[in-house]
Image (cartoon, rainbow, N blue to C red; front, top):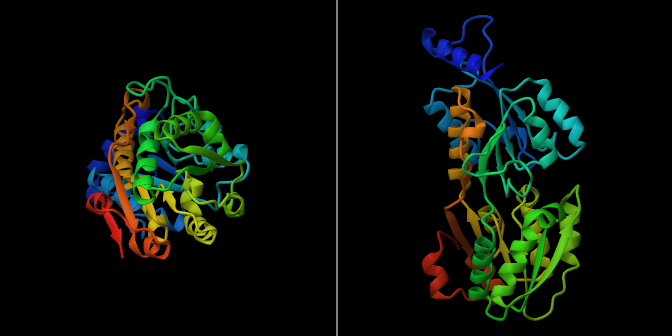
Length: 332
């Protein structure tokens, strides 16, 4: 369905009696693709606040599933196997817009040949998806959570405030992310902080066992700490990663609030509610006729500090007043 046809369909649907589509009328179709969430969470009444925000924002703009648009879901049950198979499966549904949380560059580029794509990703320029954040061009737009050495530097700074003895930082992330853009940013941040950096990189496909192995192999010398990169796989296996870090007895900085809720020491994380609200606004604009290439990429600007006092006590760490005063979320 071309975008002008999507717009026409949306206008006629909105004007129909009680907002219902007429028999035989084709609804605009959204496909949601996530390697970290199960399909059961990808609904309006989800237990996940992030999906609730996504669907609530769409509803406020007139997009009601089954009445004014249709939704196909591809969760972690589908993602993780063959990229060509995933591409074929998603495109077989003929979506007008694809919202991809994470996603490999090969998938996103292929998807954009057949549908508009809104993506929550790290660095879309480094991934080769776009040339310019302000005017992406092509058929892809979205939200970027990679703000370079500043974000990584802030995480190192906060970890050092909590753990002043920090001298060597073990960094666990996917090799693809490290090679594309994260590696240079982390090296710059560590060098500025005067911390020795030890990357522990995981090859795809990354599963729970690969994360456990990388953490278990990390040296446990005095002054060592660990940072977990912010990949969708780290979100998916968050509880298992926290358990492995706890077993390794290393102070740790995470990228997601959920890791701290699972017992992790601390996290400095981007606001996923804000990012999903932005995603819904982009989806709405595209379904109403906007070109993805004309919608500027949104760069994450809101970050939250969360700390776990129970974990700190168990590790013999005392958070200084500076961290306690800045924390957005304190878990007792």
